[in-house]
Image (cartoon, rainbow, N blue to C red; front, top):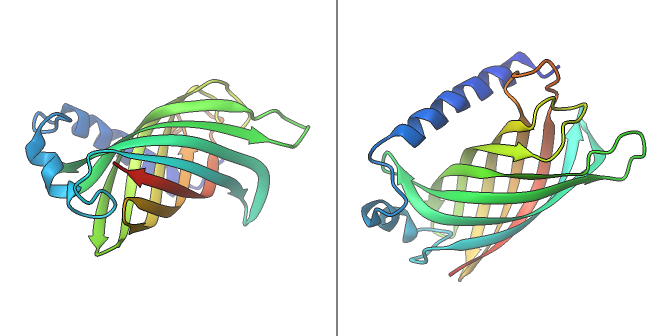
Length: 189
């Protein structure tokens, strides 16, 4: 069972996502919003970013044999005048332990907010995802993801270190989730 603060965080994230997607001022096609954040790291006046990711799961202060690789695509935007990016994320979670098979595909959309300091930037994000399998850690195909990250841009390239938590917000009693420590490498164009 996850700590109580994680369940509360997921509930707050869910409400925030609903407000975000119902907000009539938020659109992907509105250039006024993308102009604000596209001049800062990691976009630097580019309108697209593609990133590959690699991550490892950790639970109870140790790393497990579960990993993730993936491909993320994002565009700059802003939420209530805070620079950010909206991303589509496709990941493959895998493991080498023979006790249980965690191999699955996870796909979803995430909204990040970012603060840029010249070439460095930091941020946080939340997203909604669908998974290809139900397992002993998350008892539903629908899940949420929360992340924090620190990045560095050099020209059109960038790299990020992140912490990401997947779980279903206690939609089912099985909800210990996945906690990933990972790295993303990307290209803005």
